[in-house]
Image 1 (tube, rainbow, N blue to C red):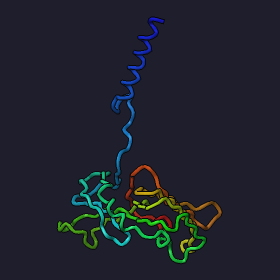
Image 2: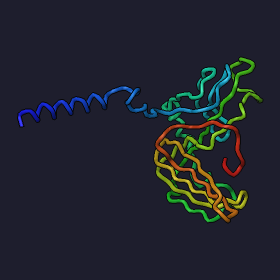
Image 3: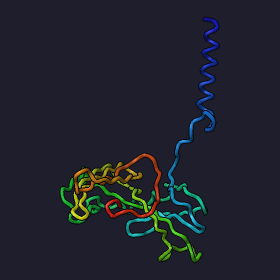
Image 4: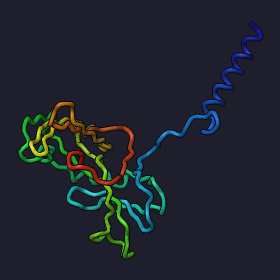
Amino acid sequence: MKRAIPLLLLGLALTACGAASPSGAGGRPPLPMGVEVRHPAAPSGTYLNLVTEAGESVYQKAVSAGSTRTEVDPAAWQGKATLAQAVEGRIPSGATDVKVSAPEARVLFLHWLMWQDRDSDGQRDEGETLDLMTHDRVVYADRAVTVDFKTASPDMVQHWQFAQGWSRAEHYVYLPLNSTTYRRSLETQGLGRYELHVPTPVTSQ
């Protein structure tokens, strides 16, 4: 028994050291932290913009040439929560089978774009936006809300589920086997990682 105590303490010390070791041979890989936008290698003079559905920029950051990921600061756009509108007003006109868990909820959708300042005037001009998009959205909801509805064109059933506050709403769309009706979801996820990529069909936007 007298020798068991030092061995136990040694084992605990080794465990603690292993937990604190940096990533490397035998270490844990670094976990994603904060909010970031991933994108194809950026040309020189490139910027990321977070914009409203009307195209108004609420945040801008320069992107390092050649980089494929850019960290962004969510605190910089949180003041834009005042732009939130009634969630029912965000549902497409003509939608059917509408169900809203909290009709009084107000939401705001923002999305990322990348552009290259080709004339070096510091302004995003026509033709400077790169042909990239993201399905995910930066979303603000003043309260938790779930929305379900169906549209005829495209033939699609949609499900939205947003947590209260700011979050990344992850997009997912699929066509069930032997069906002509797409299923699309936009739901709050904890990991703040966005992906900019080449455009895809309207059913997935």
